[in-house]
Each structure stands twice: as C-alpha cells, then as structure tokens.
Image (tube, rainbow, N blue to C red):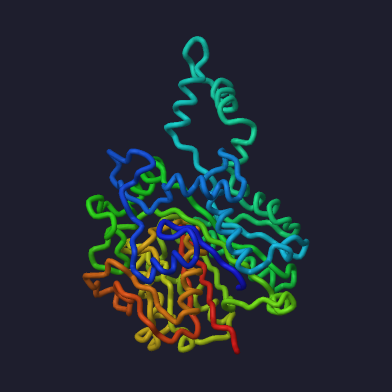
Length: 422
C-alpha cells in the first residue's frame, strides 16, 4: 500500500481524520439535509456540509449533477493517487480499479414529485408520463449516474486505467472485498497496480426507514454523539454514516521500480459467506471465524503474530456479541492480549465504504503504533469481554493487524496488514 486517503464526517483528508479518531471525536448528529421528523431514527454521521461538497466538485471539475457519493469518491481516490505519486503508473493496461459501492439512490419524495408533475391530461400517472418528466428534469445521463458501476467508470476515465474495472456490491463488505480482489489480481500477476476502495452517501428518508424496519438502527435521538456504542451493554443498534476511501495497491517490485515507499503491506485476505440468512450473521460466527483464519493463513501468520483488530463493531446487540466470540475462537489464548476497537463508534456505519475507511484506520494504527479508541464505551457487557481500547487511544507495539468487515447477506471479509520489513 503506497497511498491512501479518506473523506469522512470527522475529516475530509487522511491526517485530519486520523487526528479526530485519536481524539475520540464523534461525527454523529441530527440529520440536517432533510427533515427527519417522524422517523424512528433521526441521527446519522453525514457529509452534509454543502460548502465542502461544492469545493470537492470544483477540485475535480465535476458538474453539479454528479451524485455526492461520486464527488467524495473522486476526492478520496485523487488523494490516494497523489500520496503514492501514481498518476502515470495508473494510465496503463497493467492497472485496475476496484470499487465497492451501491450507487446513488433516488429519494422517493423526488420521484413522487416527478410522478405528480408528469400526470397525463386526465390526471393519470403512466409509465410514459413519468419517464418523460424524469428525462425532462434530469437529462439523458440521470439513470446511468445512479448505477453502481458509474464511479468505477468515472475513475477509470479520469486516471486512464485500461485494465480490469470492477464494481462489487456485497453490502457492508463491499469496499473490503474490492480491496481483497484487487490484492488477488496483483498476486496473480494480472496487473501491477490497483486503485481500490469505495464510497457511500445513502442517508435518506427511505434508507433510514428501511434499516429501522430491520430493527438494527439506534434510536438514541436525544444523544447523537453517544448513540454508537460498540460492545457497550447499552448498545441498541448502529448509526448510518457516509464517506469514502481509496488505497493504492502495488506489487512490491513495481513500487521499488517507481522508487516509492510503502506505507504497509497487505499480507492476507480471507472471504467467506455464512450461507445462513440475509439480515443476520450465523449465531456461531462461522463465517467470521473462517474469514479471519483464511487471512491469517494467507499471510503465513499465526494468532500470536497479530496485535490489533479493527472490529466490524456495529453497535448492534448481536453483531458485537458474535464478533467477540469469533475473535476468541480464532485467537484462543492470544485473544486476551489483543487490542480491539471499532471506528464506527465515531463515524457510524458507512455501509459500502466501511471496509476501506476502517482498513485505512488500521494502517494508520500500524504506522504510528497507536490503537484507536472505541468511544462511548461505559458499561461492560459480560458477553463482550475483550480489550476494546475504551474511549482513549493507546500506544502499543503493533506488528500486524486485522480489519474485519461483515455484511448483510452473510458476507465476511478480513484484511490483514503488517509492517514493512526493514
């Protein structure tokens, strides 16, 4: 990994984000870009600073119709490429782009307005009248901009990437899996360099309501900053977040030829599926256990070689309990000395972008030898009994670290990073 960058509610560049993480800053607040009154959950960690979004649009010369997810994805990708000095290296058939995102979601209120305005003369809403009004308002590129593969296509065109271009949509594991598949492509020798990551900006009335119907959202509307409480006995669900992140991956010899230093080595990748339910992880944690074990085996490491785990840690009662048990199963006696923390306590759950933002956090922990905190941890849960770095960052030797991502559909992806040998 030779370059990385993020855009999050607590920092729109890597170092600002990292400083906020180490200070335990929460980006959760009452939703401001629409009126959430009447929704069971009225809080989120959003990117609703319109001035910032417009600045990012201008920086990348993006037109006003580009979705916010594309705007922040382009910003994070450009930052990662600049950090690695890899603009020229990407303009090649030996380069690829791998993106995890669900694309842009239309707001149902806007679609309702389109349907009403496009009624036929007798007051009926037909498919033709709706599509004609939609096209009149949005223009010919409107539909394509909503597709998940749009961001990957934009990045490929922007950087001149002529190798494989892939979009992965596996819910909460999307960007982690995108990074893992980029890593595999480089190891296979298919490509030499990859831009990999993801972006997600889907906080809207319909998304909030749908997640509330699943029973997975926190309803601590009166205390937004403390609503995301991973591993705490008081946790009552996750908080939606928005953000983006990208990482520049290169084969070691390719980076050496370019004369660039690596930030860390992506040494192992494990991916599994629970094959259980769409919305619940298997109670025995078998998918999570399998993903972590595969990542360790892929890296040629044992449980005693890992010092830090950046947990999926959603703040839902079941996820945190199952993940804790899975970590204990994989690491055995070594679990007692592991440092474990959840970035979601500060930025909420950024869904498709969660994997890459949390991997970036893991890389920074490795770089600076500091385990970031799990904020809002106040009341221990007897079923969650690991060292969660409560509330305050902790300096500690970190030789290797794991970043966990588990998603709806039973998807599990684990990425293992370690320090570059001197």
